[in-house]
Image 1 (tube, helix red, strand yellow):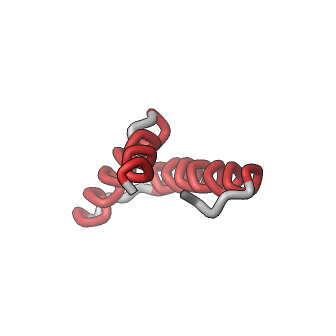
Image 2 (cartoon, rainbow, N blue to C red; image 1 turned 135 degrees about the vertical axis):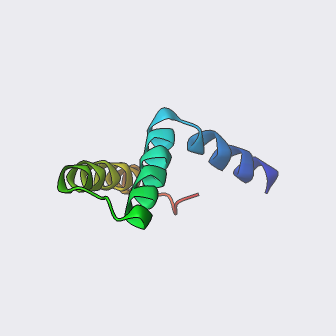
Image 3 (cartoon, helix red, strand yellow; image 1 turned 90 degrees about the vertical axis):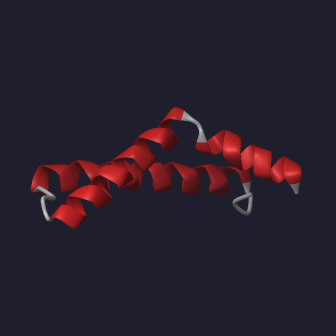
Length: 67
């Protein structure tokens, strides 16, 4: 169990994950303040789709169950 947790933490700290988390925080802030622009929404959507798309593709290629 400890090894699984360490593996997940290591994956979370990669650059792609950090960028995604930072953009999500900015999106949440802009949504709360009501200042989400169309350009930011487009960029955010593309990045989120890429992030989750690459994760799903990696899981499909390895035949894994997401762990």
